[in-house]
Amino acid sequence: MSERVVIKKNSRESIVISQTEFKGNDLVDIRTFFTNGEGELSPTKKGITVRLEKLDELASTLSAFSQSISLLKEDE
Image 1: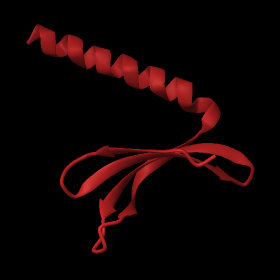
Image 2 (image 1 turned 90 degrees about the horizontal axis):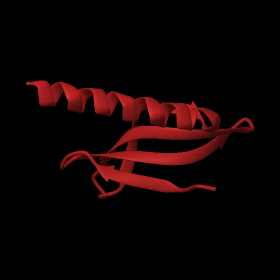
Image 3 (image 1 turned 90 degrees about the vertical axis):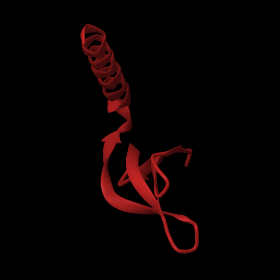
């Protein structure tokens, strides 16, 4: 399976989330891509790769972090 989600970061960069496989391990890659001279997305070194079984833990941690930031902003 090679599903891919692209989120526009700014005029030059996008965040690409994709499912990959390496040496028998199912992985999720979250990486910054840039638009090259031909107008195609090309990967940068900036990003992380996590095992698929850790995706729920990562998502819940990011959600909790986002909620904490929202609470801090309300207190300002």
